[in-house]
Structure formats: C-alpha cells, structure tokens
Image (cartoon, rainbow, N blue to C red; front, side, top):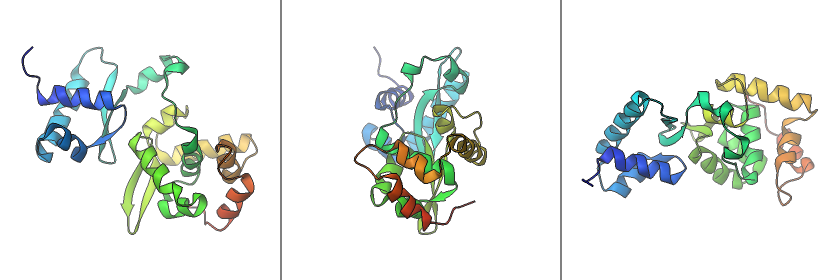
Length: 203
C-alpha cells in the first residue's frame, strides 16, 4: 500500500480516538504544523460531505473535531449502539442544559471543584460548547447533546425549554434533577439545593 495521505491518517486518528480532538493534539500526533492539520481537517470535512452513503460526518465543536453519526441516522440506530455518558457527568450535563447559557463559575458554585473536570470531559465528548467569557466560560449544549438526550430541538435556548419541561413533568427542580442523576457517592438533593439556592438562575 502506498503512503496514506494526511487526510486519511487524520480520519483514522479521530475515528480511533472516539472523542473530540483539538488541532494542537492532532498536530503533535502527526508531526505537522497547525495550519497544515487545520487545512487537512477542513478538506476531510468536505470530502465526507460529498461521500455517497457515508454514515459519518466530521464536526467542529468549540475548536475540537469529532467524527459522529449523521443526525438523520440517530433514530434508526439500536439503543445499545449509543455511546454512554459516564454517570458522574450527568449532574453537570443536566444543570448546564437547565440553566444555559450558564457560566462555568456558577456550575463550580453548584458542584464544587470537580465541575472543571466535568466541563472538560463533556466538551471533549462534543456535548457542550465552552466559550471564553471574561474570566470564566459560557456553557451551552450542542447538537450532539440534543441527539443523545432525544431532544427534538437543537438550538440551546429551545433545548433549555425542553429540558425544563421534562423536569417539570417529573416534578423536579434543576437541583433535584441533578441530584437524582448523581452516583451514590456524589451530592444529595439537599446539598445540591443548598448550593443552587445561592446561585442566580441565568435566563
């Protein structure tokens, strides 16, 4: 086999990683400049769009690239084929969905220092967008998040509305919803509620 192109190598790396990757990370792996890798990733994205009967698309979320199943195919996939989110990340995911656009500082007030790790992990999985906003970060959900949780909307404000309606149907506040999703060793509902009561809700 002849030497593969940079596009082919990058496609294999991102597919094999199973998570989102930054241009910096990819550049280090293939020993190429940032501009070369960025050009190659944009070219690869265009190639995948043109590829007939391709199930995958290359998506950039918050400066990180991920290979994912095309939106229209998600309803046709067996439930068991959906990648699981570790349970430890669910409280943070629920709080972000409920309060978005949410500052990272507010999430830290609610969850403590572990919120930083959870935000990074959710971002790496392409589930949230974290954009720099002054001294903190502004957190919103992504299309991938909406697909994972079965939300019929994609735009983050509509996702927030849907998420709040679903919580209301269960008779849960955002704090109670987050606590109900937490592993046993994490906060109880009362601890979430205590932290949440001092944090203003972002509209």
